[in-house]
Length: 569
Image: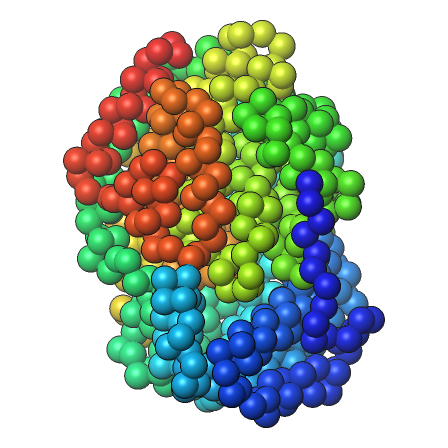
């Protein structure tokens, strides 16, 4: 693999950001630089790009340290210091540099196709920028950090053993229904302890976010975020269309699967703790014993698809950029964090040995491969793809890789079972995405709502997408606050519908892979290598699929998944 890290042309070697004055001179120099030709402009853009990449990597390393150990006060303080003391100083300068770029006489001489998306986003950033929002963003970052700390501290006692919630949730795969019930109730009880605190964090976030939108001249935070996220290729109405299409074509398919589950388990009714257990009475799948094995087998699987893919993860392993196991004090969830100056990203997750962990590893590997494939692009912003593209890379890898999971399982039946569980899981992803997205639309359109009203609306929305065979008796309160476990609502608002759109694209890429093999992978790689130098539609087309969420498209893909499930049974 080629060396990705580039020679610096602007930032001094050995620079460490301790305080704002450490980097302020670089911003001042960029604001003062004369631009008298196209070559001057291009050099100025490269200098700015290097500065922004340097800062992005510094923030990334602070965030990684904080989430890997939420109890580490120094790591938390380092991140907070940057977000409270340095980021607010950067924002006005970034706005000045955006204006300097757009006002430059030579910007019209830049390659119009290559720079189209970038300049469009810069213009949008100028349009929505308000200096009065800077302290509000600082408050929001602090609240987001509070959510991470509260979540990371959630532990339960199961049979005298202290467990993280991901570790405990693995026990929901046990055949012993009484034990599953015990575990479910223990996790629910622990979440309930933090319910009011998480509700309070969300209340504060909603008001702050609405104020951010109002300051920028928007009626609500939803419309503000659609512009802030650069959603130039679709509108809120398309999201509503997606919600309805999922209800029409995915929910009935899941209802069929739920009825089969109830009958196979010989139950009178399904309870919330009955959805992870194998319906044939087999023990939970255990695809790996430890994270070392997970890494080794992931690299093997990726090599079967394309040797380049395996090399990406091996490189990250060699550079100690993988933190995979679940442990006390670690923030929840999983993520890939690009480190733009180094050129090699970081994977974070909470593995406990489950199939879900295997899928998460391959999901984040897809993001990592995307990062490597787009590393050649000249500007950091060219690599900053919209989530509809970023999640296409990761969710496609989940499905593509299924054809090579044999190394994780002892026999063909376990391998088939793993594929079936994965396909059922991706079908369940779509209505959950629709529910979370619909909930966000409501929350911010009704920003003055009370927590009790929010609870009632969530229950109504969940009932639309949650299927009809689950009995929630005695667990109504847990159901009413299920949304609190979705970290996106707290940390990255309105970043979730992308998973739904990308899931459709991933199914289509997988279908192409089954039919065309290597050709489909070449299309996949070509699409990811574009970064964000093309529109979302063009990137999807390069990948050999459509960027579409119509009823007919969802119905077609649902039928394909249904057929694949039938072939595996």
